[in-house]
Image (cartoon, rainbow, N blue to C red; front, side, top):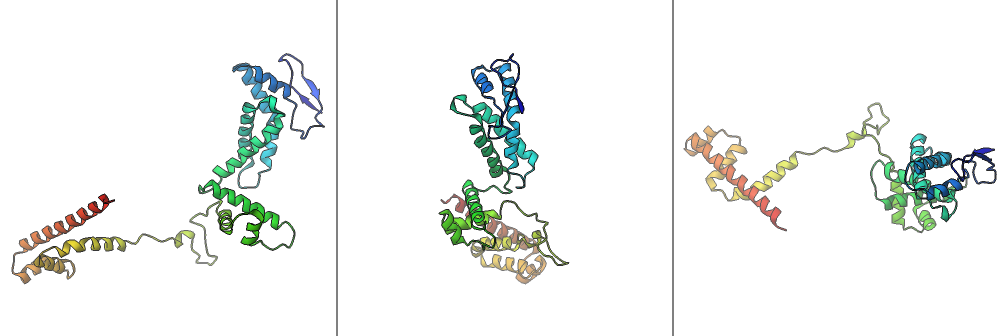
Length: 281
């Protein structure tokens, strides 16, 4: 025997109501209170009645949340999500359209499922992929429900779900992508095991050298022969400016000016060509 506090009038006394004929013990008889709330304008009285209804149906919301436990989310967080769905159900319910429970259960369940879909993935994936994952997961469960049943193949799952084998493959990949591994996770059981971070590549600075060299080639071709020879002796043969000056019979100061002028010319030509390439559609 449970006590129902619904009344046709705010001042009417509470009367006990037996709920043994109702689908669940946490489904109180609140039809009169919902009808009353539908007639009230916005204000303190309506807000108070709304809070009463949410409190009365909260056990049902907690029961629905319990169906989703052990899926990687704490029960307390699931209850909060279910409670949010209950509030939405109370606010949107129209008493003229049938029993509240029939409206509230799918509303609350949908809110919890949306929480898993939008918040529980470590990486954001398209909704289509999430739907494929759920279809594949359910199909695998159906196909392996009998003891000793072998793991279904991609073709088996495709035939069971009506999906293509490519879609099934995408769903199977998503099954393993619900959460991510830490970069500190060990990928070897050896004593000298390494972490996942050790398998990641690093940027190779040599690529920058290759890009710079290719960018400078055209400008070097346009330099006079003597200036090309000076740059070669300085940067490829690692000769000092004084040695270059002695070999060419000119002053070291003149060699320094030629190197600076040649480098500036090559750089300006390379940068100008890069800017032109960006402007070209």
